Length: 167
Image (tube, rainbow, N blue to C red; front, side, top):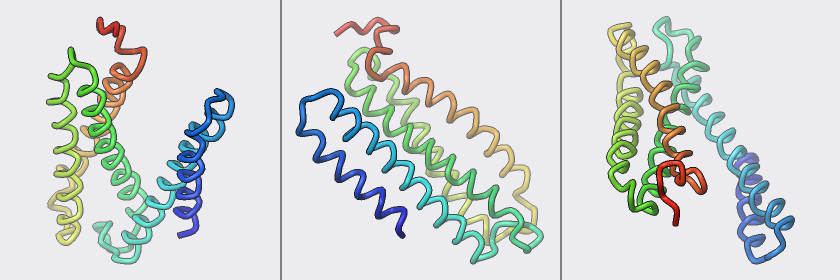
């Protein structure tokens, strides 16, 4: 899609921008373009998911497609949880004192994959049998994602000094 193409162009600009040493150029050509590119990819993926849910009408118990927006929002949340888990693993590997935090981030990664797989397979059986499991997993993943974001933030950059890592 066009949005993904814009995201790719932004990532290309960011890659070229890393060859410069000026902090202002780095800010605008790397950090800003990576952020814009990431948002473009997020929008492209979200629109693709929404189209898939709407086209297959596998998203609402009433069969009228009313749950597509909510299902897409939570599928994006599960994907964000997965990305935060992988990012947290990378941060924990770089911070020797917190290698044991990898277990928590790995759990986030595995749970996200499991919920995404469960969500895509249960769509075939959308007669209400899984309503409570679906809502429990949604509420759980909201809290779990927030917890993982906070943990990953604390391991990133200067924040790891909070936990005693001074190197």
